[in-house]
Amino acid sequence: MTIRQFLTVLKARKLVVLTVPLVACVAAAAASALVPARWTATASVLVDASAPEALTGNSPSAQAQAGAIATQVEIVRSRNVALKVVDKLRLNESAAAQREWREATEGRGSLKAWLADRLLGRLAVSPMHDSSVLAISFAGPDPQFAASAANAFAQSYVETNLELKLESARLAARWGNERARALGAAAPGPAGRLAAGERPQPAGAIPEPSTTDRERDGTGVEPRDAGAQRTPDVAPARYAQPNLESLATRTSVIVLSPAVEPVEPSFPNWPLNVAVALGIGALLGVGAALVMESLDQRVRSAGDVSETLEVPLLATLPHARSPRRVQTRLVGERPARAEGAH
Image (cartoon, rainbow, N blue to C red):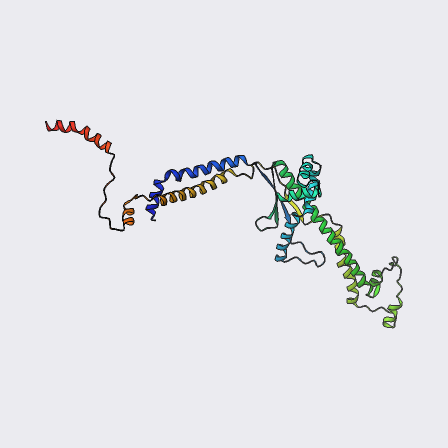
């Protein structure tokens, strides 16, 4: 089929081509009006993935930072965070929520866990433009509740991140203290005695050298090896760093911008739905016209004649007018011709 034949078919079946998209647009508008509206609120959280590690003090690599962002996304979507949101919003105290839980589970399981799973089903978390900013979006039937839930998720995520950081710092501090004692006990001099648990001497007192120190060189004079003395002094300082971090109350995650109550619903999107329906309807209309044309093979042009009969076309006659119009014109011209004859 050539382009000219295709346009001829569309012109002949223009009623079908125009009716199908119109019906599709009306159906999309009606469906959008019947579907309950859904509102989406978004809160943004900044994640400092480049913070140095507690023990080594080294900054993570770019690959490690990308993995850290993906880990933070999973933390936001964890049930631990969702349970905090349930407590903040007091959803378990709602009589309607309790009734829905009984109808859905027949009273089995935990109400808070059931509510947390429902909240996670409406939550969407993603990095914004491949950055360290996380977009926490929540969709709900009420714009005010959507904004409150998004902010509750952001705040609960910050609290959970702080708890994880403090717990990790406590474990690192415990291990570091044990390691510092082990290294200090094996080191000579006052640092070793202090790490081993001996009480420090008062200010101004002259410390008595231990028997082990006097026997080490046979002269009773303690050797002054700077490297040996520096090792036990620096190690406790290194391992004491997590102790300071465990006392910190700040975290590497902060709320960049809280969620606000949305003005327009995110679903249904009327312009988008109508545009999609119009495009699909146009394709269906053209397809229906082509199907109808294949079932009713009429000769609509001179090219169809030669193509169907497979013979060369010698001549074509112009489109004939209506016989009634021709007859009326001829009848109207007779008196003029008669007058001209006289």
